[in-house]
Image 1 (cartoon, helix red, strand yellow):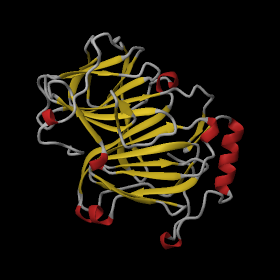
Image 2: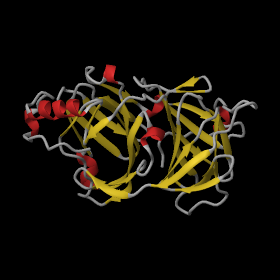
Image 3: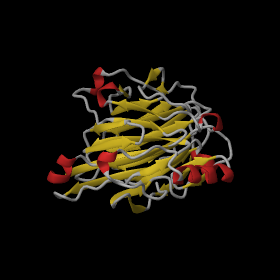
Image 4: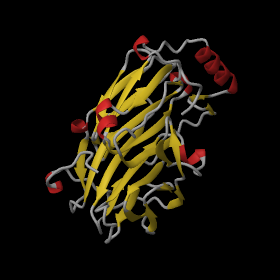
Length: 325
């Protein structure tokens, strides 16, 4: 799991929670079910079973892979629409190409993130590059959906390509964790991602036996998802392992720990931490449309059917698929 790594974490800025911080308790731990997305690539539905009141402003997150493809096996998604939210695609291993009906897109690879604000709507395709399809290889990533408030749902679409080298790297006081701040802020250190809805997104690699306590904004919710490895969450040390998500309660700090012994193919605990300022507006979702009312969903579907999300580039010679994720 390369993402972005460093030779010596002790050379990085260190972050710790203040002594007077209030520890966030762990409310729930859930296990992500497995499924398939797009043309058949394997995913774990990270937020399945978690109440929306705990997720807001997040909508869903899929862990894509981790899978070792044979030549000819890598798969992506067909053309599909989005409206009313942002997609965050974080590639840990492998590569993914993106393109949309407004001329945007690009390629992202180890440690890169593409932040797509769908806003008023676009058509979009995600696929492994031809080289990966021919050779096969390791593929692993995340896709997160972040809601937009009503005032921003119909804004013009935009992209941010966040290269791995621009991610803010931090460590814990003892150097036991590599903390990658992709978006938002942690203890005064800001990641490169620019968000409409205030959030923090972090990927931490935690050495066996290390325990980390981080400061956390009290007006944000707090979620942890285990990409790989075993450990515990909260000061009460609730056990967690690969494919499990934890919801933290209220407070100003959160704690997580890596078990002393990890699986042979997973040397460290790999964990994603998410926090956001709840929007607290009505939400209606139909596949890739996330709006505030059913009438707005109906309008989104009608606009899609009438070609108002733009046109697929002629070079692809493809017609848009029906609504999907």
